[in-house]
Image (cartoon, rainbow, N blue to C red):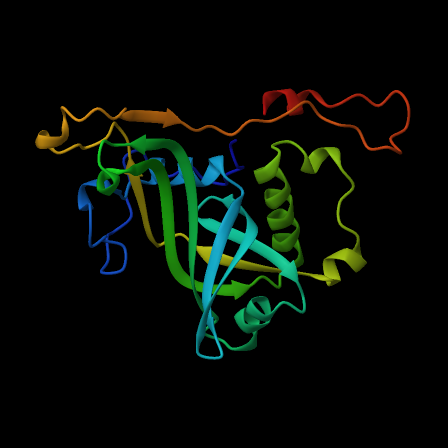
Length: 228
C-alpha cells in the first residue's frame, strides 16, 4: 500500500538519531533513512499508540494515515488520549509503533529463535487537529491508508460525523526503524544437532471481496481491491 504524500522527502534524507531512537540491543538493525521509515509506515494501517494516563502506561491499537512527515490518528471526541491531546497547549507525549512480521526464524536452540520483521517507532507530542480542511484531509488519508483510492469512492464525512470525530497529528521528527532479515544465528557447536533450522515466511493475505448483503444489484467490486 502507498499512502498519499504532500511532498516527497529528499533522496537519502535521514532522521537524526536521539537517545530514545538508538536501540540498546542489535544497533546494526536500526535504520534512520526516510525511505525505509516511510515504506514501513505505508505498508501498514494499524499502529499502537502509547501514552501515560493517571500515572500508568496505556497502549491502544488504532488506525493511522501518513501525509508527508505527519501521522494522523483518529477516534471519538470522547476518547481520553484525544481529549488529552487538546486539553493543554503542550499536547500529549506519545510513542507510536508499527510492526510487520516477515518470517518465523527457527534455530536449533530455543534461545536463538527469532522473527524477521520491520518496525518503526515514533516519539513526540500529539496535538488535536482543529482546522476543518486538515481534518478532512487526515480522514481521507486514514481511509486510503487501509485501501488506497477508497476515499474518492465513498461518501465524505458529514458535518455531524466530523463533529463526532477527533483527529490528532504527530510529526515525524524523532523516528527510527528496525529491520531483521536472514536466517537463524545458530551457535557453531549446535550445527550438528538433529533439529530443523530455517525461516518460515509470513505474508498478509487478502481474500476475495464479499459484498454486503444489502448491496444494490449491478455494483461490482472496484478494480482497486484487486490491487490489494
